[in-house]
Image (cartoon, rainbow, N blue to C red; front, side, top):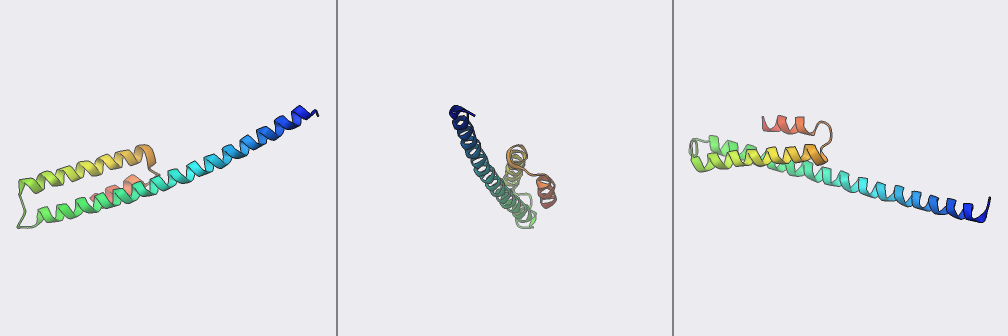
Length: 102
């Protein structure tokens, strides 16, 4: 082997090692974003369920403002579910969230 071939092999090995390291770092970040998205979805679902319970109370039943707020919270939960399914969801996330809102 010539010196150029050895140098080229070392450079390729360095770049491949750097590429693998960079991909591992990105994967860890993506998984962390996915976990944060799951936490956000859980928080919004809990809020929506709580608002639904308040709306169902005799004191507030039929209040138009709370009804609109309840509908808006459902839309926000649906939007976050859609985002989570598209960009960060893992298999089974949607079915868990649907179970919580039902």
